[in-house]
Image (tube, rainbow, N blue to C red):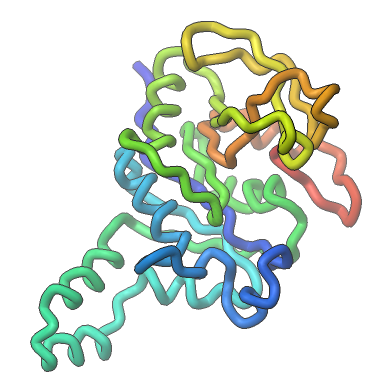
Length: 232
């Protein structure tokens, strides 16, 4: 019987230097898109796919992420007193989306290292893994689609999307072998290739479903520049 995927690890420890100066005083994951921060969209995607526990791997200056998913009794009291009951219910809903666990990555040593920090919580169960600053809009939650593929093929799954050839050098790209429509075996990955050297136009989108074997692979990975370890 396939183990149920009930836990998602989300990496939110990066500095967000690409978004400066907007991220000088707040995490990139807390930047608002319409009326919600980016991280809430990601969490809601996970919950929409049946995830029950969210493990957020945080770092320095990320306290606002924890506060966002925590109860705020003073705010709730003020909303109730002001008879803003719709807002009150929405604020309460956010903290009840899932069970939240927070793990601190003491140094920004890559998303692979962040994932290793969560090993003690994940244990020996398969799980979802996501970056905390990528929103994917889909009728069926992207991670939910990937979980179905995992259940069918019993192996780790990487989410990919088609990108224009002229932008291929901005992404990590896979060398695919089609298994069925929309599902590919990953033969190789190439990080930011030239458009004329790219093995496909299918790029990683920061969504994964892993078995616990990923931890062995990361532990055997030699750290790169600055001691960093990366998933992809």
